[in-house]
Length: 325
Ligand SMILES: Nc1ncnc2c1ncn2[C@@H]1O[C@H](COP(=O)(O)OP(=O)(O)OP(=O)(O)O)[C@@H](O)[C@H]1O
Ligand SMILES: O=P(O)(O)OC[C@H]1O[C@H](OP(=O)(O)OP(=O)(O)O)[C@H](O)[C@@H]1O
Ligand SMILES: [Mg+2]
Image 1 (spheres, protein in one colour):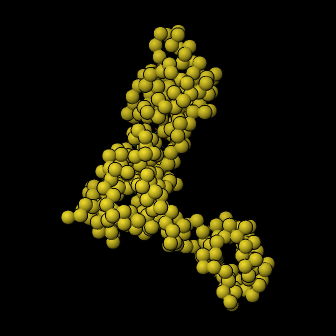
Image 2 (tube, helix red, strand yellow):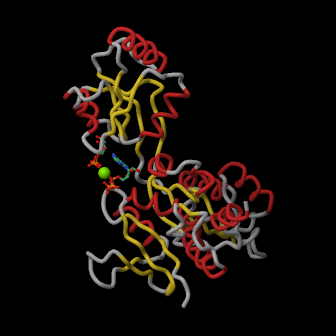
């Protein structure tokens, strides 16, 4: 019996919907054959892949232990829960959703405390005056320790908090917090402010590989196919396809278009009849269309691309390099 390839995706929370949409866009449709409460799933067309539906934090720990090959989770959870994360897991690609910052926040009433250096002064003064250390409520214990140490802040102690962390200063269980924030609404509602240099980590959802998973030849081949879908979609969404045909279309013009608009010519220069296909960054489309018409094109058509399969797969190349190290 062959060991299945395991891909872990969030079963709930903020990352779930976006993750499913991400795989669907890449042409990989995740299915739960036994219904919505089934925590094992499949990918159409990839028989040996098992989808493990887990919470975002569980995905980070399963990646660390090599129980899953690939997973989608937040960078905050990886950096917090995996010592030496860069050696144990590879962040193959950031996915453009699940953005949030892990921050140091203090009461807005502390008007003289704006930076970590100010915090250093206050924590030292507090200890001298009260004969105890200031308390930081957080679930990000390791990120907090490392960040405070890097800023030379030592007179504090951590109070572990599993939820509603922003409420801790008001109820008196801590003086300040380290937590994750996106809009800042929860911090503001609790009368807290982020220190000017208090952003510990800018996190987002990542596609992640585990070093310690069973990377058999078959598992590598499965990863290659999955990453090929993802890379093809990523490559396609960076560009639009621009087509035109006109007599004056030549290499020099193509070079100029490349330099000015960042276009690439995936199938080479114009054909003998002047037919040309270009890939152009979305923001440069109108400028490119104008340029081509100025040089003789009567018509320029622009279409969106679904997938672009290249011989090179930068995502799989990164995985292979990581597993070789
Ligand atoms: N505003 C936000 N607050 C918290 N997490 C966010 C936010 N925006 C994005 N995230 C990301 O989503 C991840 C999972 O958070 P979420 O609270 O949705 O998961 P969860 O299902 O509650 O998981 P768990 O049960 O493990 O806590 C976070 O670790 C972070 O990477
Ligand atoms: O900056 P904001 O946009 O206000 O978001 C930040 C809040 O969202 C998260 O909580 P979540 O809703 O995930 O609840 P949880 O703590 O139970 O996971 C996080 O722990 C913050 O409390
Ligand atoms: Mg949560």
